[in-house]
Amino acid sequence: MEGLMGSSQITQIPTHCRQSHLLPSVPAFSLRFARASYRSHFRMKNHTNKSFSPIVASVQPLEETSVPSRYNNTQPSKGVLELWRNANAVCFDVDSTVCVDEGIDELAEFCGAGKAVAEWTARAMSGSVPFEDALAARLSLFNPSLSQVQEFLEKRPPRLSNGIDELVKKLKANNKDVFLISGGFRQMINPVSSILGIPPENIFANQLLFGNSGEFLGFDKSEPTSRSGGKAKAVEQLRKAHNYKALVMIGDGATDLEARKPGGADLFVCYAGVQLRAAVAGEADWLVFNFKDLISSLD
Image (cartoon, rainbow, N blue to C red; front, side, top):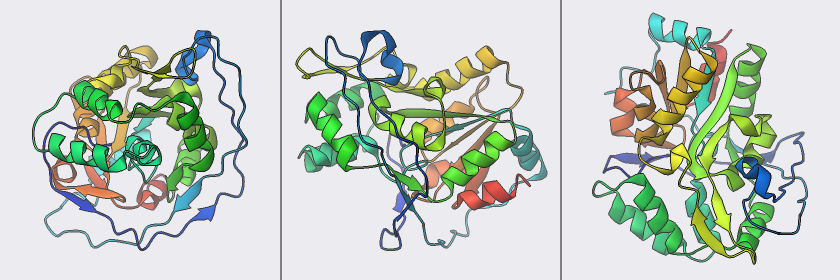
């Protein structure tokens, strides 16, 4: 997901080539609401528990795109390939990387405020806006209630990028820890993590807050990803907590590239299978348009 930290050239991958098909087997998940375990569930007080029917995600195959000739990082160097193969942990951005959509924009559209949020985002992209301010402003345009979020999750299953499920399985088979680090919301990321078999404790994301009647209260500002520089901070915390020798960050935006700062990720892989952001792609250690490139390189 691209942070709202300034303008950049964006090339949208054509949508006419996307065709959905269902995953053959998807684990069920349920969303429970409890104060004591808000990190993997909705936080609200005295709300009745509610389980959801299983979510089935669609996988979005993307047509091969022509790679602009100015990029010379589409083939990994020997050092980059060695880091990728020997990494102890791999961290993924979610919006426009693991999933083909931007979660907050999809939720806003579902709640009838898609145009307003998109227009605000366009204005924000023209200048430097702290992520926490941008997030608060966009949410204030539609103030999603708990019932709206529940209905959204039931009617709009996550759309996974083609090959991400296979890549995650391959990484875990190679004994690499997998994390999701996102500026999006846990409520929308929990179903994705369940489908991919990534435990809730391996998620760094934001948290929508609701009151006793399900009214929108805001978001948890204590989450590292709720503010500018949050993804870099999350990666630093992971390295210290697990003493990883090598860690990789995969994403499409400036906030993902930022995670490669000293003490953070050793390697940044730019995934441009959904959106190609020129400024980010050019600075990446490795630019890929298909997760198959990362899968085959692990053999």
